Image (cartoon, rainbow, N blue to C red; front, top):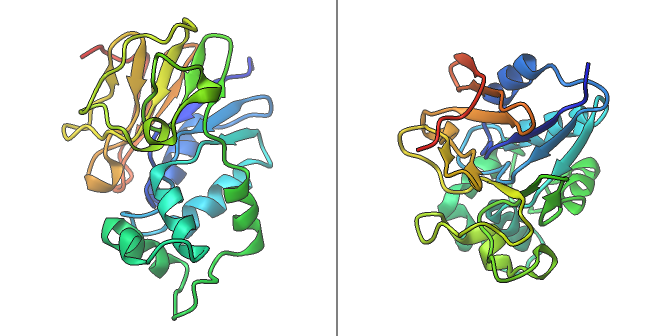
Length: 226
């Protein structure tokens, strides 16, 4: 089988949907899977999501991009920010999944290693991957964290980046559970925790796999521009 480059949108604690999605994808040795961030919060099993992504590294290469929810979580767990800045945005579900009983020292060592391995962006020959957005006036190495992790496409849909590569992002969920594709940019956050889909895209072939929290699944050969 030819190796694939697959992006997975915001998972947000939806471990069951991730299980179904990976069973559809059937990752193989040689595949690269880029997870677009926001693994934690909102959904019921953030710990399970991280467990599955760690296990997936035994099969193929996993490039984990950091989302704004990981940023919030880690700042609280490290004591840099008051907890209320995180828990009001889904952090309670994450704490529950880790069995929180008062101590913020909740991460197993392998989870600490996973979070330490996260990157701000990833590039292939024809695509680049970030969690949220980008500034077309800056190189990928010189982006502001606000654009990379926080700026929604509802604020601004950027023009094509001068590097000529197609952007693959998450963060801005579509309330109608659809993939947002404007040609030079595609957003894979299809609102899984809100009743929509967890979406994955093979960026080279255009094949899309989707699964939801109820175990429903579907496969499409290409995204339809909106």
